[in-house]
Amino acid sequence: MSPEDRQLLEENLKISKENNVLLLKLHNIQRWAQITRVFYWLIIIGISIGAFYFVKPFLGNIVNLYTGGALDVGYN
Image (cartoon, rainbow, N blue to C red; front, side, top):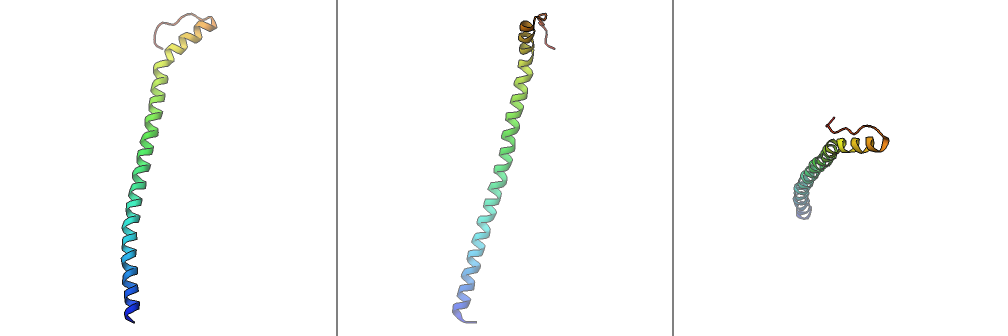
C-alpha cells in the first residue's frame, strides 16, 4: 500500500467518524421534534375537548331556547 493510499484511507475514516457523529445528532434532534409534536397535538386536542365540555351546557340552553324547549338551568 502506498503512502498516498494510506493517507486517503485515514482521511476517509476521519470523515466517516465525523459523519457518524453528525448523523447521530440529527437522529436525536428528529426524535425530540417528534416527541414534542405529539405533546403539542395532545394539548390542542385536550383543550378542545375541555372547552367543549364546559361550553356544552350553554349550547344546550341556547338550542332549547331557539327550539322552544324548556330552559334547562342545571348542568347535564
